[in-house]
Image 1 (tube, rainbow, N blue to C red):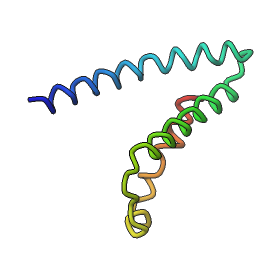
Image 2: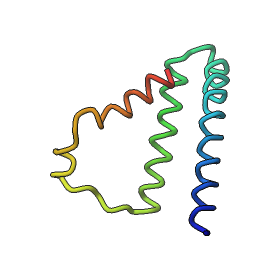
Image 3: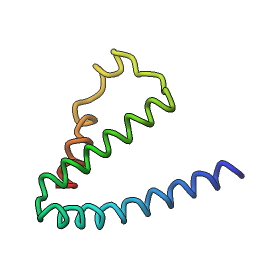
Image 4: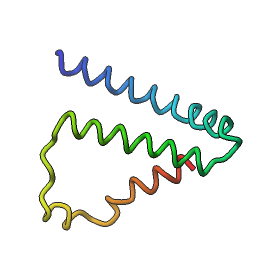
Length: 87
């Protein structure tokens, strides 16, 4: 079915992005004078900008305040762990 094909293409694209991200970040660091902190910061800033533009374009419904409060603490560590991976 059509949905399966779309999801397969999205999964393949995401896998390709993960592979390219490491190389891009490594080269970015080298181009910034071998400065890993600035490379990580600017890379994550690009992530924030991309996510913000997606939120503005797609206008998803916001989660309720209770859903945010009831989310286990360990669900919130994805962002910091991603930053550590980039660093």
